Length: 345
Ligand code: FUB
Image (cartoon, rainbow, N blue to C red; front, side):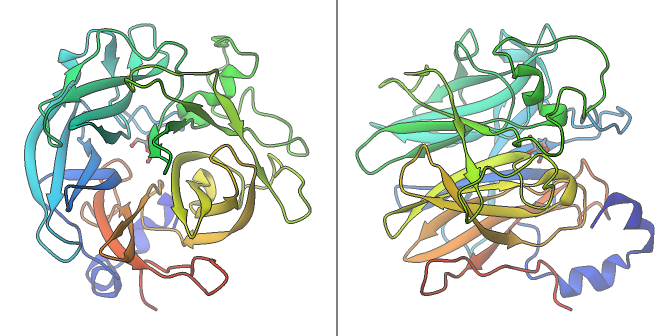
């Protein structure tokens, strides 16, 4: 549901047709990364604010400054805001734009992974730690060495290895890293430096983390998404190619890499046999929501699977003022996720 349709939307009607309601309404929240720690659901969202920055295709209007962690006893229960967990002013390397975070637990310690623009205007990914899943978190003094772009998502595999998925095109700057170095040249167009439409699309990145979860244990690799013939999705395949918002979960021994298609507003996924992929494109998880962005996580709770996502319904369609929601997902017998429409007809 692109932004230019907003003026035609009857939000009272849309909210009645919505399959789920905002988890909290006293603040704007987005990009929900959900995990179950010690039997409880913790949601690590962006904390949206209106800082007055003009809307542009590089996402300058997403000017978030801090994180608040939400917790829930179950997907049906009330969500609790646990207050300020980390503020940009306390992160030595970060200047602005605290975008979509994620978290992991290891040996009773909690790790918050977050992207922010450093003082040179380049997105990096940092880590902050706490003894509590809701913080407050203490940031490492530097961003993860060799990190770049946005939208970290951390996945713990059954063998105890942790992997960090990340990346996003346009405002997320992934297209500026094609040579391995940041290309800071003008123009500042979101589509500059992208491949041609008939070339393979840019890939999200994945790197295994070191045992202390503070660094990459290896150089980041491409997360390749292929079609049913095994061919990489092309840059012009906007309905299916990766844009931002990586997530990894494992279901029945298979690895599910899911992501947002950005300018076409879908949440899609591919299935593979390894955390590194390749992932064969398998379909859509969520049809477009009201608002430009779509961003999600998938989490199991008591044997059922849930999609945490956001839309801009709470702000009546303002792109950068979003609200997080949750709905159950179901799998077909062949392991395909049934596509969800966020609003009933
Ligand atoms: O919240 C800021 C950005 O919007 C996120 O990093 C993207 O995934 C999109 O949701």
